[in-house]
Length: 80
Image 1: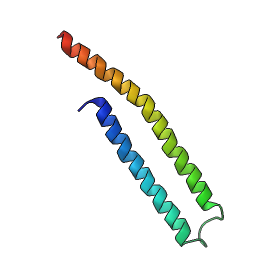
Image 2 (image 1 turned 90 degrees about the vertical axis):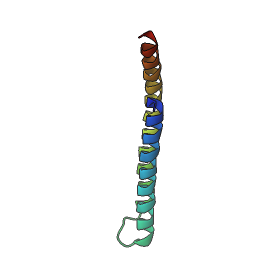
Image 3 (image 1 turned 120 degrees about the horizontal axis):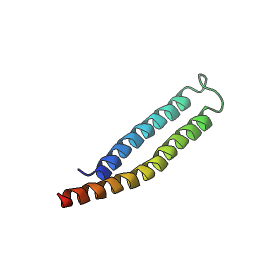
Image 4 (image 1 turned 180 degrees about the vertical axis):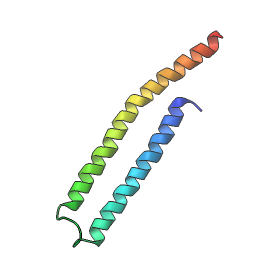
């Protein structure tokens, strides 16, 4: 399995985990309005959205690095 494929799979699993956490926190805030702050939904949405966006942005950079490493490994393998 190439490094690009492993990276995409790993990022998809982590993003799915973050989405599940976001879903859990949002439903917790809706079910327990007396136990959370008035702006709980807004804060959870901003925080989780930022975390998922930052991970996705970092994932794009890492994808290009992985693609470069795959090309280098293929060239090294061809020279041997």
